[in-house]
Image (cartoon, rainbow, N blue to C red; front, top):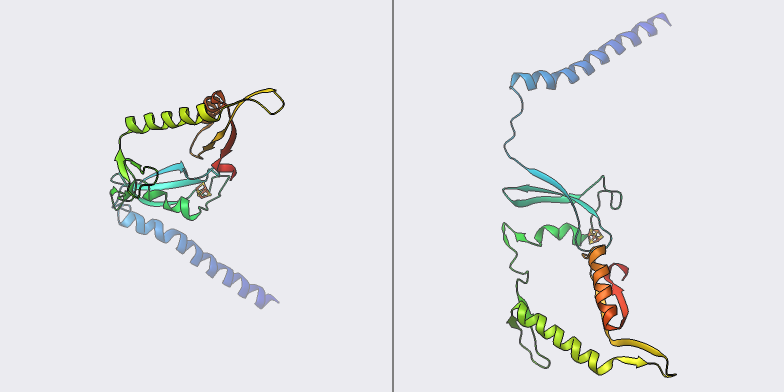
Length: 192
Ligand code: SF4
């Protein structure tokens, strides 16, 4: 029993010396080399995925104004570090290899009914065209009274579909504007 106790004590001491050596070594190496040099200046920013209403958190690493890494934020309460494929592709929204993504549309494209070609349009023309079509549709389909003569003042020929990138205030304004036209069909991408 005494021999076993001495052996255990020796083993314990040996293990302690190895462990302290392991802990001390990096510190002494660090001092010897005068600190570890960083070769890249990398910025990291937390952000929220812009693609859907889940609102996952992500951490974006950038260098020289370019995204070099993107991953789920492990501290975010919703996704806890995970991202779906759309979220992982967020870095490609603006740039691919430092250039503006050539597949991202930068201008309005219009295809007239029955045509097979897309034509580039400016925003002035586009907003006027949307307003014109909304007015025509409302004038044609606005319902003042239902089949029993009760006043309803509604428009069933246009629906409103919101996007997940809209915030509460924008959703509130859009809903008010659409209700003032008489719309009754509302949907939101986050609910689909
Ligand atoms: S698109 Fe994916 S990563 Fe982005 S918020 Fe929705 S679930 Fe999260």
